[in-house]
Image 1 (tube, rainbow, N blue to C red):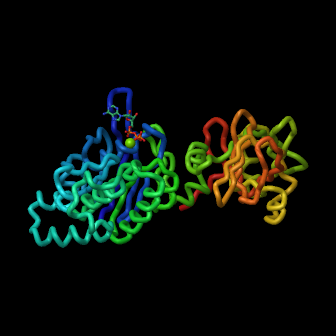
Image 2: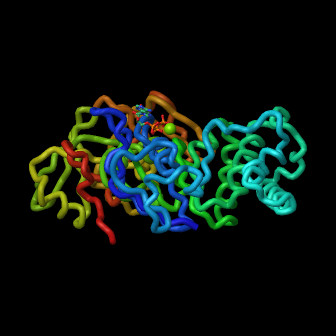
Image 3: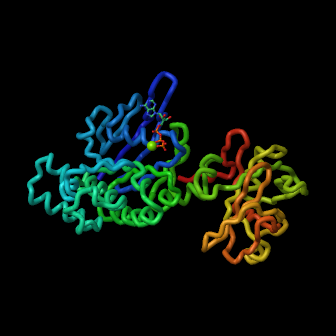
Length: 380
Ligand SMILES: Nc1ncnc2c1ncn2[C@@H]1O[C@H](COP(=O)(O)OP(=O)(O)OP(=O)(O)O)[C@@H](O)[C@H]1O
Ligand SMILES: [Mg+2]
């Protein structure tokens, strides 16, 4: 059980260089918090600050109401699993898992009980007598997680723990981790590059960039209500499509205009969005964002009662990816590649043209200078 609070936490490596800057975050008991962001944005540094492996240069770290800035890692009662899981090669799986209890002088009988419990959760009971060398990558990973969870610490910090595994094992371990989280009822902070891991495991996602938090919210809200263009573009794969357009007025209505394939295209935002855009952006240039799954072909658009007066763009397909349950088509405009996700029945081939309609209720509009999401919905 652990409640954590980070208050303006900073890690300054030298006079000009921050690893983490003004980090403010509340983590509640039993949350599964995910840190995501590009390489070098400070994810590992933040974990190391929480674990006590790195000194906080400014700000406060509170764990269960106690100021922890100056506590030794041991005293924080936090367990960390790294990307390169370290197992002792000359110990068996059993001894590896038992190690942290053994050095704490926990009675043998109690250790035995706990090792067996953990082995059961992780389904590694048949492996207990083996040495790490005789394990697969995924099995080693599970043993490392076992060695971390046996202590029942207040919180687990995991830094890309699945990154060495192949796609299938990752998916399997993802399900395991979710189960472990439910069974252990514990707080987990988890760093990943993997979109699916972030979306499926997290109860809360923290998106970081250049050492600073961009947005903290549930996976669903991060995806559907990103605070800025960076978050919108970072979360989701393939990425959200961005098209620059001009805000104009047409017979009293707000219209977004852009040229695509040398033809002028228009988007009529819904009334709610139009009002927010009109306030500050009339006559200005903005960035329109639309996710690949919010673009449809004519028949599907008609079925979904999408406004067919809004952009029907005709595009030449430059890449096609058949993913089984869906097909991904790519076209180029404004010197960028844009993605569209359609049903697997779509047979458009590379070089062919396709007519596409945007679901105008799903558009995002960003300030061209600050990247702020003009349609961002504040919630309490
Ligand atoms: N000991 C150090 N001294 C100086 N700079 C450091 C040190 N450790 C990390 N940094 C810098 O701090 C920034 C954040 O690093 P960090 O390892 O936290 O990134 P990350 O988000 O974990 O990246 P990745 O996804 O690549 O693991 C980087 O610019 C890195 O170069
Ligand atoms: Mg890292």
